Image (cartoon, rainbow, N blue to C red):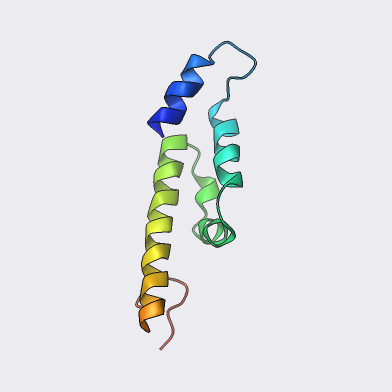
Length: 84
């Protein structure tokens, strides 16, 4: 994230500079469908601060990856796939 912020800071006071909202829209557009769905379930859209939102998306993605790994191994202990 710091690379994006540093590059964006270089564009400050130009027409190409992106505000936090625009950066977030760009980042959201690159999320895969599963991560978008999970972020919506976790109500990540309510998080206004860009850095907190990025961290929340990272946390959701980490949990998602663990869930997929456990599902492949035949057992899931958390997340939306929890079924016994």
